[in-house]
Image (cartoon, rainbow, N blue to C red):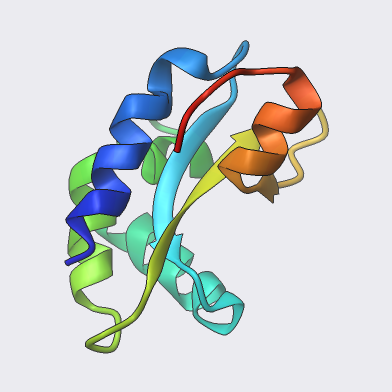
Length: 106
């Protein structure tokens, strides 16, 4: 199951700024919304009012949801930028590094 993508995500963690975070999900954008819904249903509730971040930050829930994707689905690392407006703004590692002048070898 695309283990190299999970390894890339793990290696990138020290480069994240502020409250930004990552998750592994389907590369195919048409699968992203149902994937996120699955993760949200699978992840345990950690507080009375859980934010989407709590679900997407749960690595076990992400792996279980990845197993529900159609066989052969390509995965990628999404970088979520913490914006104060609650909008899910995401990009790729390369873009994030370029914008934030981060030297990270993929």
